[in-house]
Image 1 (cartoon, rainbow, N blue to C red):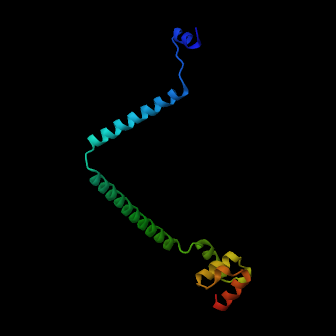
Image 2 (spheres, helix red, strand yellow):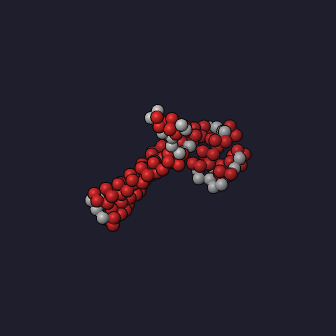
Image 3 (tube, one colour):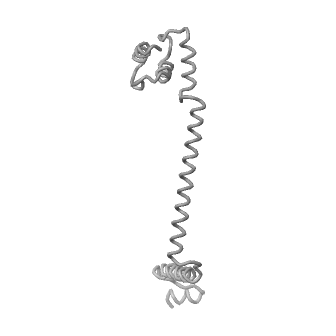
Length: 140
């Protein structure tokens, strides 16, 4: 009596590692073939019609996204116009602070907001002293 006969007597069987890999591969192959056949037999449209439908749907989705982007951009633009420049609060404070205050008392953020309000060119690269001098030269 050898080991295989003992396993068979107990109702067990010994499998090789290759046989264990073949069963799932075969099962997958059969499933893929059945799926392909069912899809081919039950497809409501031809491949050309399906591709055309997919293209049309994708084009409509892109058009919709484009229109949405335009609408959002318009709404954001309207909101920006309604609240003023992005430094609206700083600009308002700077304008209020500048009435009766010397430019020397303003912070750089307030000076920059004033420079933006008077549309001073090159303001983004200026430090506090340069902003102050340029604003004085511009008559702000």
